[in-house]
Amino acid sequence: MLGKRNLTITAKSDLEIVWTRAFNAPPEFVFEAFTTPALVQRWLLGPDGWTMPVCEIDLRVGGSYRYVWSHAQQGTMGVGGVYREIKKPSRIVQTEKFDQAWYPGEALQTLELKKEGSMTWMTATALFETKEARDAALNSNMEKGMVPSYDRLDEIAEQNAKAAS
Image (cartoon, rainbow, N blue to C red):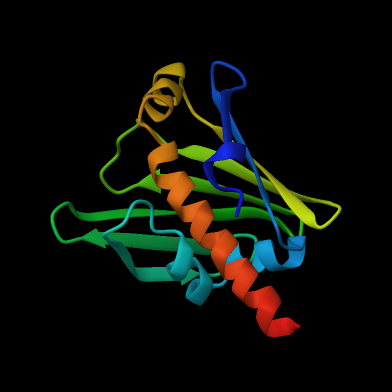
């Protein structure tokens, strides 16, 4: 498992954050893991202790998504948005707005998947409305939730590969 070693988060501009990570799975599987509610609920959980009781995905341009996470001590956190572009299995563009905003406004997220050998490289870009919003996201310790989530996705991909062989 690759884990935190290959998660890179950088400020691309005053309004953008880019993060990259490789997964040991084909792009088709990684795309499905980002767009299938039953899979999203298994891996997109952040640090231990969180669950995702609500995961609604209407995967079409103009369709929406809604996630609500729950934690016994920390309460709930919800986010949603609208799909702007979908190109299976390589690209998703969507808006993102949290219920209890920890950064002001809305972000536009672009997820790109590219096959390199047996790996799929994910490049995700978040475009914020202001530099202050970008800075709030950068200073949020976002990797604390990303690393365990992406590690879970690796584990699910490994299980899927074993089941397929």
